[in-house]
Image (cartoon, rainbow, N blue to C red; front, side, top):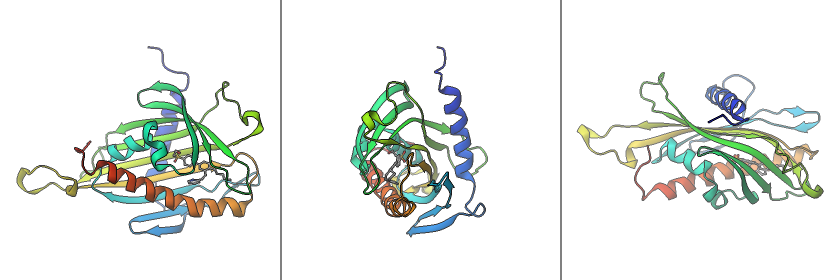
Length: 239
Ligand SMILES: CCCCCc1ccc(-c2ccc(S(=O)(=O)CCO)cc2)cc1/C=C\c1ccccn1
């Protein structure tokens, strides 16, 4: 089959985002702005022609689920509205492949800014992780804004379109149980790196945006990881 016109970009951005996620937060001016148990959230304060576009990097360790499970639920359109509280409306406008969809999401208006929507492709892939001895495969979901002539920006002037690049990179660690016993969820740990850069599209007060991110990102990651743990607890392990 001939490849989809977006495939070269999807492949390039996914590879680039995996590399970016695996860079530590030691260098590059990351500042810790939220901490909750194993979850640590860092940001860099950046503006692009007067608009706040602060990159975010969150690191978290979740016990009892695999990276495949984390990415499966993050990618799945069917369950998105169960954990994503800032989304008012979500549509899959194109299915490029089983592991690659195009989403249109209208986000709830955050006063006093105008309402936003986001149109992005979402791609999930497994990356063999040869260089980590005890680490297992890495699973990644990458979301990146794209254009679609059927869904032009600011539909009837209602929403301002944001541009975003997001990646969720998950690595599974298994603590092998005693002499060949069956692996249970108690033996599994998932190391997560969530990176996001959201350009608000139209002007929004820096103070409002920074307050939104400071409040919403920790909530978002805590809620999402709790959702996956709850969904997986009585199901067979998806390695
Ligand atoms: C003035 C407000 C401008 C921001 C509005 C906004 C735009 C985009 C997004 C957003 C956040 C996470 C993703 S994702 O990780 O790909 C998962 C799929 O939904 C995609 C989009 C959110 C929000 C608004 C709130 C907000 C901001 C951070 C964190 C959580 N909510």
